[in-house]
Length: 164
Image (tube, rainbow, N blue to C red; front, side):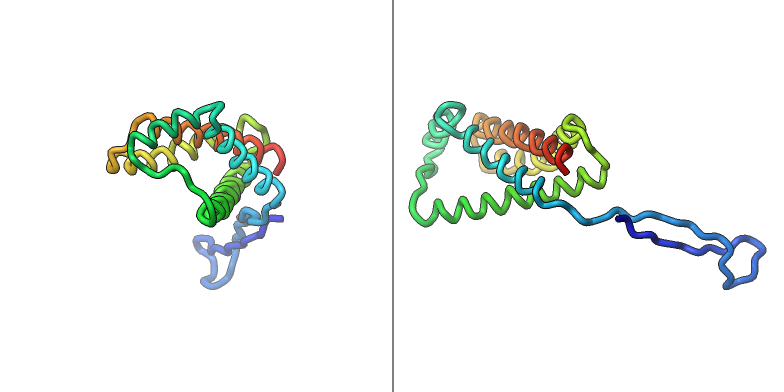
């Protein structure tokens, strides 16, 4: 339910201090259903698992990571922490995206996917590109990562719009 905000204004020629006009503004409702957020967060992670699997781009990613002499084999407690933080990050991204989609009033998969595309282009591409440039990282690694983000964000944007 939206909160109603009433602003009273004085009309020209009216008695000062006496309200003569009322303007009603509706504030957006900040409540959000968490099921779409959880579903989208899980889908985000599943897309990442598939994207970086040996059957899609995992082998290429590993080859380029070896060329950069960076550690790509992670095990033990560290992998558990990585999955915990990745889960939190995926859910947080889905939560923020769900708010954007809700406030925009988007209800179809195409509209949600379109919002996901613009969020990806405006926030993800523009923040990740400088990191890769300053670190002189491989263009292939950048393309693998940024296209994963594109696919995942577009898909979860569509999902959130449909099931919110």
